[in-house]
Structures are given as structure tokens and as C-alpha cells.
Amino acid sequence: MSYNTKIFKLQGKVQHYTWGGTDFIPALLHLPNVDKKPFAEYWMGAHDNVPAEVILPDGTRQPLNAFIKQDAVTALGQPVHQRFGRLPYLFKVLDVKDMLSIQVHPNKKAAESAFAAENMKGTPMNAPNRNYKDDNHKPELMLALSDFWLLHGFKSPQALVTILMQTPELQFLVPIFEGKNYHALYERVMTMDQHEVDEHLQPLLDRIVPLYEKGFLNRTQEDFWAARAAKTFCEPNKLDRGIFSIYLFNLVNLKPGEAIFQDAGIPHAYLEGQNMELMANSDNVLRGGLTNKYIDVPELMHHTRFEAVIPDILKGTDGAVIGETIFPTPAADFELRRLKLRTGVPVTLTASTAEILFVYEGAIKASDGQKELSLVKGETLLAVAGAGFELQASADAIVFRATVPL
Image (cartoon, helix red, strand yellow):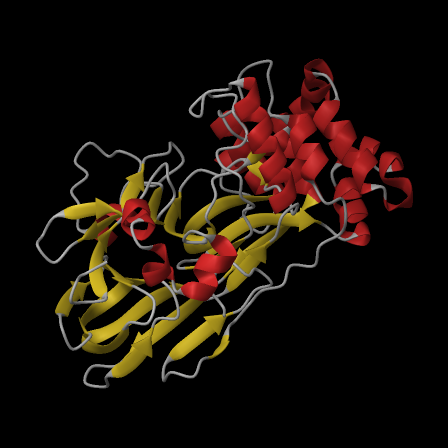
């Protein structure tokens, strides 16, 4: 890597999944969206399927995965290269308009063997029935940019029994949960035949959907999301069994600036809002409902942790740099930091590995002594390992910084 600079502009890639909103990401990235296409995710990373592009000093572009591969030790630094052999994280912006699938991510060992097995079987990488897109685990941290709603892990035994008792159509599940048996409970709702799913859910939906349509339900109620799911995903005589999960999982509301970590095996689903997301460099998702994508219930069950989860809402801790907040997690693959920069107060940073900085608000100038780059809201900076650089806000700025905890 023989450039006379260690900082570069980076161009991410938009994913147009059907659940995405039409306005937030286009406005953030200054892109027209006349056709009102869904802009669901903006990927800033080196995932082989969707790599961001490095804008080189001569104006040409190179995919980030190829840019790193040509001199991985220089780009990543020795410790990260030795441990991971690649950029270990994937950085995203999400705009969730319609709720996402009930999902679980595998752990590292499981992902390696299952990915190899699907390859052996010859399942094409882009086949709709493919579960494993790579050999990696996918712990993830999300930070809310707006009021954000999600499902996260199983409710505590007491809260679970309470909601089942309060919902007449679901009381039949109470005896199955006897002795706090999360596995038996979830297996029941996920494996009963479709006829029985319809039998239990139809009366529930007949009762709650009219309330939802009249505006009598609010987002703090499971019924609100169950009714919305019915209107989004259900076909006549084929109700989506994912609706049961809305009552079994914790319903969590994050305020802007709050974050939550989701480890392997924790079942979850995003419901509504915008967020920054930082995860291991993987696209492995096992789905169990509330989606038009491929669902594999046995595989989902195999990787789910059947235990109560108390949602741990992270507010972040102060970093060493003025205005920096760090959101530490148990994951070795990534760490998210938020920088609040004041106009006229420069900040000096050193990249411990290949770091990606996304300007969420305001405008900044970045200089490493060789090169100066100007970035406005929606633009992204790549700093390779060892880069020492100064950030100067030309308008009060919020910058999200993806790195690896060393």
C-alpha cells in the first residue's frame, strides 16, 4: 500500500430490502429517490458480497475487501490481521419502516461448520434457501438514531405468564410454560401445523386489528405490533406464526443515543426506527417468521438460547478523547464510538486498525499531514492502521467511529 496518505474517503452501498423506509437514508446521503424505492441499509464494510469502495488519491475506486487484501498487515495492523485475517466488523445505517423477521444469529463455530456443509452440498451462495452466507458469527450492537422499537430475548417468567394470561387467545400456552420451559413453549408455537396456527391467531387478530385500525392501540402494547404484523405479513388462511413471538419476547423502546447488544442465540426483531448498527463481518441470519424470506425453523431452534433475557440498555462511557462516548460490548470484533465535535475545537485520533468514521451531522475536515479531506453529513472516512489524523468541525458534528477493541 504505497499511498502517501493513510486516510481515504469511503463510498458505502445501499441495500433496497422491502422493509426499508423511502426518505431517511436518501436524505442522509443526499440521494434522489423519485421512485420511492425502499432504502433499508447503508453498508460500510468489506463483506465480500457487498464491499464499500475506497476512493483512492487519483480518484479511482477500489472495493474495500480488495484494498485490504493487497496489504492486509498495513491496512489492519498486525494484531487485528493476526487474530481475524480480515476487517472483522461491518458498519451500517438502518431505516426500519416495516418490522424485520424474527431472527437468531449463529455462534462462530456453528457458522464455520454449517457454511462448509452448505458449500459441500453445492447450495448456490445466492439461493433463496441458503442459511449461511459466510463462516462468521454475527454479534451486533445497535444505537438508536430515533425512537426505536425492537423485540429482544425472551421475557422473564413472570412477565411472560402475565401477558399470556392477559391475552385470552394465548392462555392455552400457560400450561406448556409450566416450570419455565422456554424450549417447550417456543417449540410448540414454531412447529404446530398451519391449521392450528390459524385457529389460535385468527380470533386474536379479529379482536385486535379493528382496534389498531381505529388508533386505539399504542406502541407499548404487544397487540399493536401483532396487529401491524398481521397487516404486513399475513395472507388469507396463512397467518404468520412469528406473531406469537411478539408476546413471548421483550418489547424494548430505545431513545436516541441509547444502544443494545445482541449476542449469538438471542432471538430478536427490529420493529421500527432508524439506527447505526455495528456487527461482526457476517450476513448469517436464521429466520422464524414475520418475513417473506426463507424460514428455517429447525435451524433457528437449534441456535436459540432458551432463557429469560433482561434487556441491558447501554448509555455509553466517556472515552479518552474530548466529546467521545464508547459503547463497549463482549464482542472482540468491533467497538462503536460516538464523537461530538464542536466547531473550532480540533481532535487528534490514532487508528488502531482500519477504522471507518461516518459523519452523521455537521461537517468536518480530516488531515493526516499529507492529505486533507472535507466530509459533510452522510460521508464516510477510512483510516488505516496507525493513521494519526486531526478532525476539525466546520459545523458542529456527530461522527460515529467503528474500530476494534485492542
